[in-house]
Image (cartoon, rainbow, N blue to C red; front, side, top):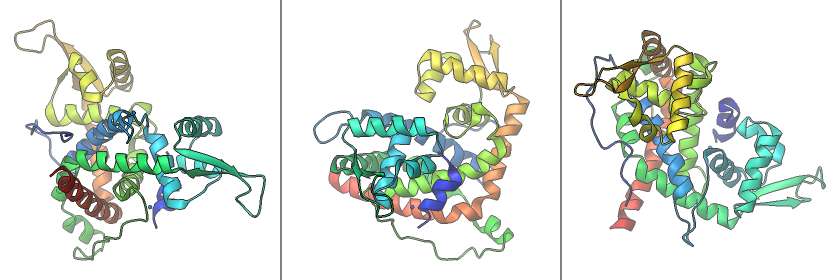
Length: 323
């Protein structure tokens, strides 16, 4: 997903919480609690990806969505009919990748294609979200609301005052509260927030494939190691919601970049156990990401405020439905 393109377009844009256990910190100096914000966001991204794949629709069938597909649906819902080339621009992907995403969405009944919708080019194909796609957006919006409690708490812990004043922004400026005209207001604000927070992440570690925000699992592992200490190799698949082989590849990529290392015999009572630890380089890198996000807080503040308002409303609605 292209963060600058999508953020520019979207600027007008019975489940447990992601983390229900409070972990002790291991001597990490927090930068205005942004390290916790980053950690909670990575957890939420991983949990949401599973939820939108497994959640049932009104007919009891799996939604079978992924994050690129969800981003396309929300964009079509916000902006109306789009050319496939415009969808590719929003995703920041290749035409072949967009063709695959649209093909999956069309087969699932989430989008339709039509000819003759654009006066300047009657032969151009237009893609629009279907009624089934809007229903899927509604389901995903509720899944996000159900999973968002820890992210909301992390956002509330961030102090904008000192950082905003340092940038010449009044700390008591009104917070934006308007929801976008979307079937999934929480999702729309969440995507806006994600592409905004991706900007400092990409500027800091975008050149490292292992930490690219397109897949939050590398950053999640590094953040967990920095905040909570070593992790057994066998615990990684559950942490990042991937198979053992896929988890092994994530660790290998982080090792190749010098960010983590494996240490045997470091578990009391099990000398054969192997844990993954963050290296000095890895710790410096993740703290650099946190510092970059902290410096970007004035730009993040509007999207965070709008997201908090949208998700808080969705959670209240969810509570009334469950009650």
